[in-house]
Image (cartoon, rainbow, N blue to C red):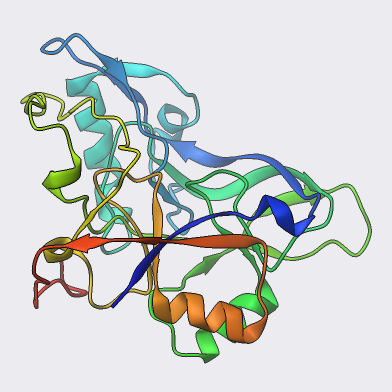
Length: 248
């Protein structure tokens, strides 16, 4: 199986813009062990509804909290999570709320870690039998008539980069907050042993700004004439793991 990174296709000529944020969010972390203040807002779960949480105001404002408070808030929402979700500081939940305008392609990537899709395009991809395509409603206000219906794809974090493309002298993650401080390498190599066998679309768990798809996804987009994004092949190293499946 071949794998590809998905990016906005700036040469497609679309003028669409999205100015929005997810309704709820976890705080970032202030770690007393490594002394870092950090967050990772690229892990998004738009299908997760936090309204059953009594202290909902704790998830409405972007901020940083000590690790103990962050852990407490994680436990409040953990029962509500979709299967396969991985919590991270700054993680977001619920629909995208905001404004949009302009002309959009079939697929839309306003940020590298978001992937939106027009409803008709999603239905055509699902009819092709692609796995793991979950479209979630958005609350986008359009400044135009005949606005498209954009859904956000909920993309689970599965898979990692291979150690060969990471710095050999890297420090271990912080034992308290888990921060490793690594930057996305220019040359990326996927670790075959961590890649899912049940998804045609996912984001990396260790570098979750990277949205990855299979060649099945790419072939279907090309065959159906779906546009708005570009696909860039990524090499894979190691031996595939036969048990990376939907129970992971």
